[in-house]
Length: 107
Image (cartoon, rainbow, N blue to C red; front, side, top):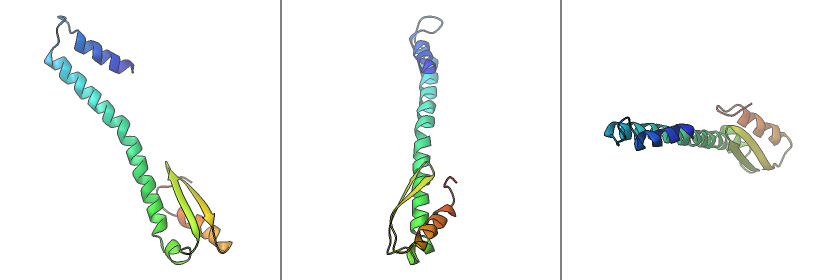
């Protein structure tokens, strides 16, 4: 926030007390870079979470052995949560191992 305040002060007053194109351009460039940097991280995390869930859903184990079970997969910042009901006790560990072997999730 301090950096943005400094940018605003640069725009308001340069060395001569006038607005200059260079100061405005610099401020806009820095502000744009800041906005891109801040907003791109959540988008990347969301895309990775979507890939983790998709990889699990389309895996051989889920499509073959777990297709009739009611398993929900949620991924937030790479941390995967499995909830739901399974028809056999062994399906719990199969679902866990399947998601655990996919790339991108946190161990």
